Image (cartoon, rainbow, N blue to C red; front, side, top):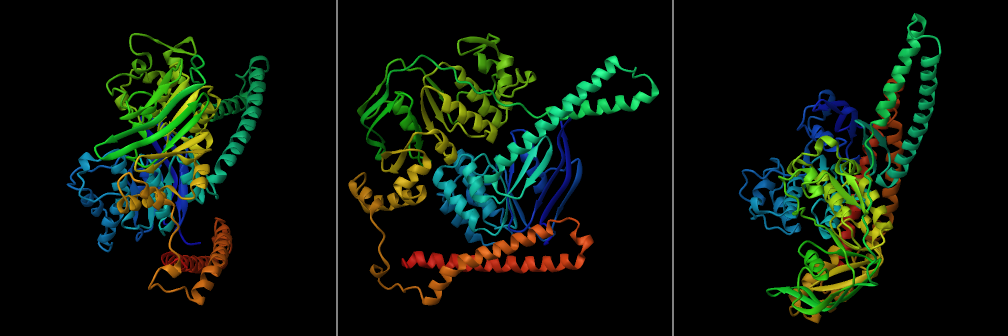
Length: 614
């Protein structure tokens, strides 16, 4: 087996007197695709920083190959001291790296490189930080929530870019679809320890549930044994006698183990406070339009939202999603057309920017409005400390200023505030930001049980598929089209991915009149055939044959690598059969090189085929 590029063993770390990591491990080999999952606060970001060499662990070992290169994407990049975005990206390049790639990546991400880092939005800052870690094409990429603040076209672009890299990846993300599409190994960080699954994220949740079920059965058996031992302690032979001290020590050990098992964080209790039933018609928009200067945000949109609908709103950054929501909810007047709201509407809103949170206000006052110790939920008064516990806040955090909360904690606070308000219309603008996967599951279940109507703005494709009954998609130039079903259904009906269609719309907009029908027509025109492209050659027989046979060859090489990997995963193989270990390591290296060569050849031929329409 080829030695790992990066290896963490028995990592221990204590923060604030409380153990955060206990015997955590991580192994990253060349070309690995690892997703690191766990609840908010479990220490995922901390473990990634230790892997990057930014934090020193209290115990355990960190090993990295001396010639390996590593790049780390933090959740909040520091632009201090950089005059432009390009300067920040170029500073991350090594002496042998291509400086042109830095500017090319920024252009791909919709930036010029001349932007002032101090004035970047959240999405722009994330794109600049991504360009910095991608430009050098390092041996190992450590990415902490890379999709945060990105729109769907950029997320899909990033997926394609990462799939094409030879770098090993370690990903932390709350975006299920992103993890499913990129990962081949899953590391679960739970209560300070790691468990590893030799599958991508798609197989993780079933495996995790099985592990927790087995753990629950073991805990039940231990509880029964403890009860029997406690009964002996109370009514049996006195524990002060010397021969019974060992049995008493065993009982104390079992109690300690039970406390450790029960230390797993509880679950968020998500219950929406539902108001009275609204009328059947919730929102009716009739030919509404809105423009800023010569830019159309919404043009001639007619839409009906009925009680119980779950409408997802999708589009790139700057498409006007938030403006559209304000138009539909009556917070903003259209330039033309009318919006009619149904009877008896009670609206609760969760905004993306968290702008309604005053960083100086305490957590308790943010939930109660100040001057009270109670929150009204579903018509019942509940003490604020109990309500905080429903969202995994400890009593000691009651007076904590909001500005000191983490991103995940602020996300849970926004949910707590929104769900405590009586409503029959929920308006959720990027509710999945900074939430862990377990909380997303519970939020999805709550929304599915919600009896009212939902307007949902989100870039989380999996979440849209699970929650929405229809999707309103930004098609460019102020056009919005509603598609039945979730995000995947929308893609099937459009026949194009988000980024492809938007690029087509941009090209059409340049060729046609502003806001005219030419742009719409150009989106659906078929591409020119190979015969219509003058001066372009056809694929040779050899190239066609390679395109047909390479996929099978690639699969066979992957299968060989997987078999060799399983053999080399045997930790005792080297000591037991060193010759067999050496041969397997050599075969693995050859298979890896052959696989990389085959994949590169196929990719070059596929690009050529697309360019000439062959």
